[in-house]
Image 1 (spheres, rainbow, N blue to C red):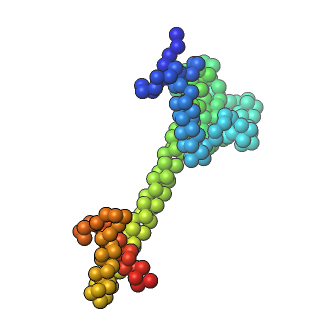
Image 2 (tube, rainbow, N blue to C red):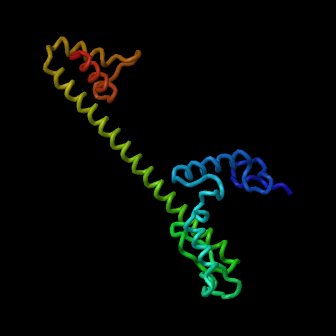
Length: 200
């Protein structure tokens, strides 16, 4: 039986063994890669430069297995003592060994990895929000400077001879075949621009 795409508004069929159609899957993967890249996380699987393959991590495993007095503790997740192995759960501390059973090891590793990725993504999104806020602040400052220049130009224009002011106001009121009212934002904007051009 063919299942449909998980997006409610999508009429297409899902990919084989997937939940989304090809287009929505590609869109979701682009978003996932963008967030991973933004957070500085790898896009591929385990590599030779993975934390568990680092020299300190390998040395810690060798020391653990060569220690004749090692005493495995209970599993860190289910507290069982049968079939317990030493595992590197926290890659930020390659010398730390966590005792866990084989059934819980995968869950612990994935949980730690998910926490690291969530923290990295949260930090990346926070940086992105700060950058956007800074760009917005700069844009607001620029707009405020433009408005201040326009007000200054209009104030200077008011001190010009009456015939010059009347000619510029008449030109400002005429825009692409339309007649602008003097209380409109477009009229004030055009008046300020023409005043700046007049003062050169």
